[in-house]
Length: 430
Image (cartoon, rainbow, N blue to C red):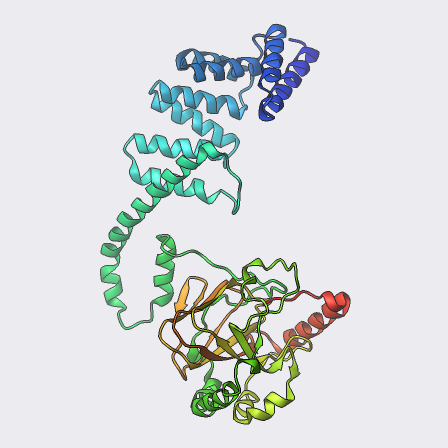
């Protein structure tokens, strides 16, 4: 076949595929007939004919045509994949595996080929190899990908195979790790336990996702160790005074609080729709994005005195912020992420009824009155109060202790410059 004929056949087949994708089946059939009439032995025409034979239940004839077509187009992924499908019907497993390996050599992340290879391993009784192959295949799917409907049962089956294998693997690992755990029984192993939980897919892997500024090469730790922040001791020692001050504020009634979420109409943060402009998540600010609320500071002198000694986030237009956060009964704060990992947040629980909880990444914590903890809010986090009474926590922001003085100065300058650049439209988070 000369070059002109080859180009024309490729154009006809491409047009046929577009017509089929658009649902114009008659046009697609007409274009294929024309290609067959002009070049019946062209590899692309043979491939389409073989596909029809597969649909009509003649895999042997399809395999013969596809092997002929591949001689002319040895790097054509669709031909190798169609051949693998035909060979599956013919129960020629070794040849099917070779065809799938050809596809993956050409296109290593070809999802259908990866799934079929995993399925073939499963048919061959290699359950562990199949689970590993299914897991690798699923990891190549981008988040939110819109996959064809016909793939959903296969993906559901893959998920079930992986889950079943993970249960067996967990028992296997527990047996292998038993003696090692015993040797280190006096050591803190919580990081390893989280590592193992993610390996077994019992927990998701969460990473910092700041909505504004990401500072690289900082430790990504959901809950930094309490012992690394000894300056929290004076705060905890003052719990009775601080709690009494929020009691005094709350005695004035709910109108003393203001809604924490005050997003403009049409905001893209849809998950906060129910809490927007609602006192179900009410706050009493002491400092708000660096601005002191003078009247509130005067009402809470003991709290202010303790906070003044903290390494607070002092970035003009952004911090410090310090507030009493009151979460109403039967209220949930939906998952969200903060604006920058250059700062951390302190939660100091004051009033905590049963049924309250907090999640940062895959880790959950309960609040215990008078026991502060620190967390990185750029991990996805959420909070809930399932009790019948409100929950009260003092919240304030601090610098990440892993930034140098020079880096802090540069973060201050950058944040201020971005605010100046955007004016009233500077990026902002919850």
